[in-house]
Image 1 (cartoon, rainbow over the protein chains, first blue to last red):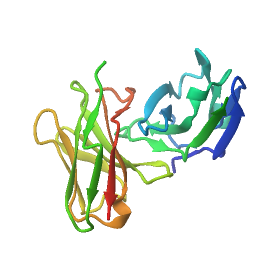
Image 2 (spheres, helix red, strand yellow):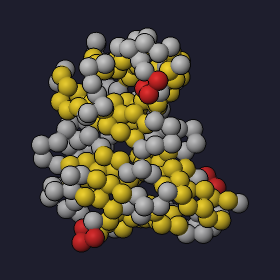
Image 3 (cartoon, rainbow over the protein chains, first blue to last red):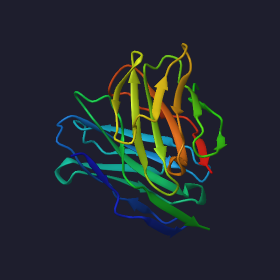
Image 4 (cartoon, helix red, strand yellow):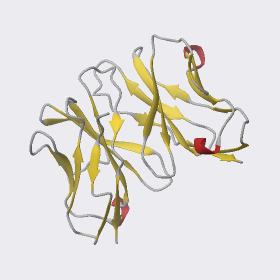
Length: 116
Length: 114
């Protein structure tokens, strides 16, 4: 069955520290999509990144980077030089491929607190 | 940049009452979704909608729930007889044609059942 596990419930760092949020997924599909969403204290869900199962290239966007490793079924998210505005709950999500309507399966989220 | 909108932002209702949550998806999107998030918990899929019919639903989406696209722009979620445990944030999302496309979420409606 499909499942997304975010083992870290809460992480607290001091500003400018680097932090990595872990995500491990389970799926039987060979084609699937992985996502990260950010939920700031205001409550909305903000899309950060989408990754296809056939593209294992890591990606960097400013201070954000993502490490996708199919061998370990992981899709980890690193924030470099964290800032207070990064404080939020971060959700990893999985969407399966063929035959699916694209509904997202979310992990339980990791609450990141960045202190000044 | 186009975005998904939801109304109201907060709805308070009495147990047993019917509520309708409204969403306006992004205009050229074809797939629509409802998710819910009980306070402090993960986001859970409720239902997906395509071509004017439900395409997939979760166990949570029982007979008390229904969805509708009454016109070309709105997408609604109705809860017929609310229970205390329906209190949650309800998110609408939409995506374009391709399965590879990203789902974009609305800001959510916080439903409080008293």
